[in-house]
Length: 278
Image (cartoon, rainbow, N blue to C red; front, side, top):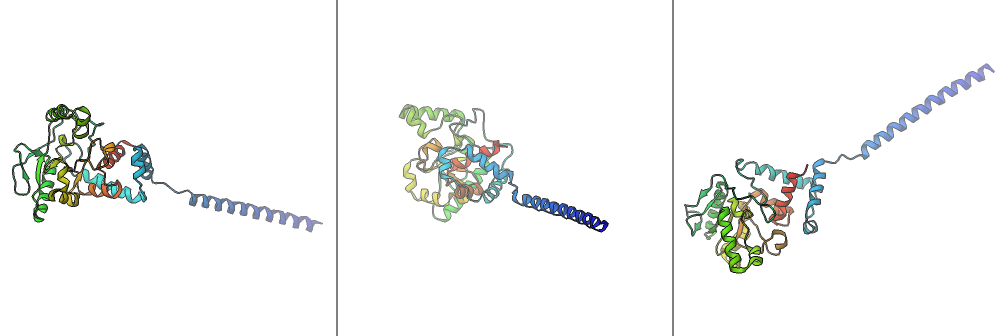
């Protein structure tokens, strides 16, 4: 009888210990599987989604970031590139358009007057650009000349007051509605940044000239981007301007083409929202 009680006691203890061991093992197993199943999301990847959500309907219908990790890596390269430019001036990717006014007091830092026609030509003596843009223009001009083409610079930096007079001129000529499609109000023109250049004839015929064709094929390789492409007036606010290019740097041109349907406005709106989003 005592033996039976002792055996039962031993069996009970063994059963209890085994049960506890199995329970602990099961809990550890579940815990490990839970840790595996919880995927840590890069907060900057989540930020891409938040910024994307702020974009307009057409942007969302045309732009898809299939590999967000790769996009983030490329975006960081561009944002770092921007830091190389004059810290005393507005950023290279500064968003200026009909909704973003830089104001009447802004003048680019260290404007360089165009005086040397060695690498490109110009037809007025009062043209100037930001130093970084002028240097990039010179490099592009040398490349164009090597291909038998001389770039003609027709318009560059414009002051707030100059742009105010110019806009009023087109209002007087074409009426307000048409002027809004092809001329910027003072404070909203890329030309005030000292980064934009109008080339050649400043009309639609430029696209069919040798200079225009060369620019479309090669400008991005030197950091120059077409600001107002065809069929994007609802996005840029302006009709197609085949002659108007803005210096944004080579990495940004590559990012624009790779991810933003080669639309400058799309890219700048995204970068602007990215900088403002935590």
